Length: 235
Image 1 (tube, rainbow, N blue to C red):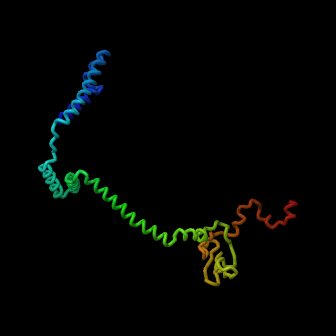
Image 2: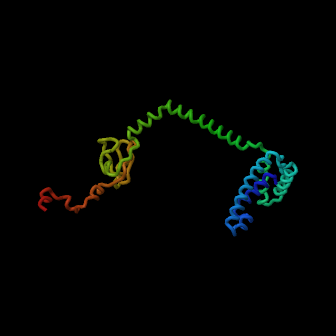
Image 3: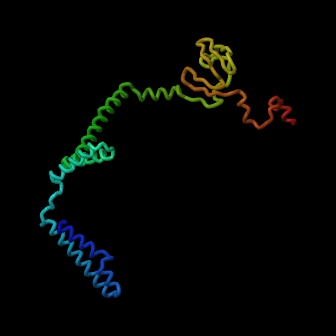
């Protein structure tokens, strides 16, 4: 242990309210005050002395000597040759520690900085051509045109035709009934399922539905649908 470390440890003990001197002086308030003040003053003086001594005393010799590192290499080699999976893992950890110790002090930060720089450079290389292609191909204008054309508009239920005998894509063209709520255009043979929904040629999606859905929200009896105006006025 270095002298400065020992002096700082003694100072920390003197500043602690649980040191033996303060505990013994608790029987008298005046005595406790004198002892506590003295301990604090002594701790402050020791800290100053520790800072001075730290600059004077020579640096502590590192325990990471070539001999100690060679010993770790031998231990890692023995662990790796043991065949035990756990010991092999420990050998890998020792190898990684040895590589870290052998690397320069700023090696890790330098590697990370180089990787971040490379990532930024790749992002610039790929982002710039993409932006240039969007500008040349007028992608923004195309997106605006598609949005304005309503090619991808989804119709709400009951907003589109629930049943019709003419083709929704070819107005005036008759369709043939091929099944329940299913009709086929005579021009392009496209099948329209009015119950489950279909998609028009312009991309508009027509949801499924049924004519009977038009009256599901009415709270009046169904038989009153056939009443005349006079019948309702006189009822």
